[in-house]
Picture 1 (cartoon, rainbow, N blue to C red):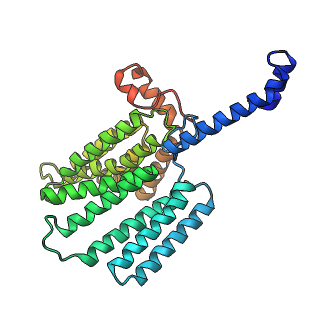
Picture 2 (picture 1 turned 135 degrees about the vertical axis):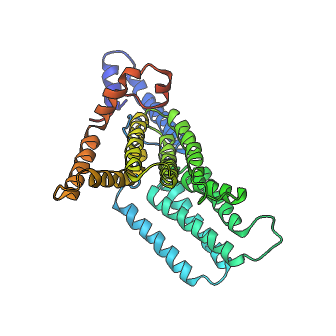
Picture 3 (picture 1 turned 90 degrees about the vertical axis):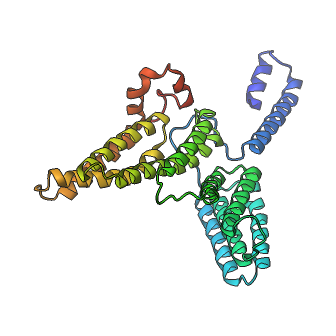
Length: 346
């Protein structure tokens, strides 16, 4: 709504001329209030236009990189000057003040990520400098991780920055392993359980924002980025440690698992899942190809060319393939938890 339209409406007798300016002022005031409330509740919310894939805005301009470098310089110099835990604590307080300005007021994402990681680094430094009190009921290593979880959680509560959930989830997993005394070397399948737990939480965020227009979808992205490698690594390491199959069967199983992960990634529209299993797929392709076609010259180059074509094709036609495969089940209940199969940029 603008003054030109209101004036045009007045000329047609729909409203009085005296009502044009008051009505314009009222609309402008209401829009300002709505924008302010939206920014407060969803400070990292994107535009209301549906977006496709993991289109996260880490920076608005090169200035964000410049500011992030400044934060890193402060972190580096503060570390070099640190002589006591008190100095480290003062540095954390200084970083919090900078966070209020850059993240709380300016809403800068990349500098905010750098600030959070710097704060977590100094939290770890404080614990390292003050460790030795045996009266605490928790080990110093666990206390270190616990404090970093708390710091990340407070950062998320204060600024609603989606990346904050990543260290919260990582720290929670590490703390659980330490407190439960789980030997992840002997039991790599535990990665699968933790990965599935994180994946469920990520899907909960995704299901609340299937159009990918708010910061909830970004929360889901960071959790998917953690869940996928946990699941993939757990499955692959468990497979490698199994002595029931030969190397050729291992390669075939890895390719099958990669195909499964591909369809899961396609269904939930999260390419992070596919990227996490890509390294294992490369290993399997090379092993399988050299076992079957060793006599072919320049086999490595042909493999890389094939993989490159695969990436280009599905990178370009991701949504078209997704629509062709999953449109027939769009009426199923489970399809309500993921983005529409008929939307996206081809």
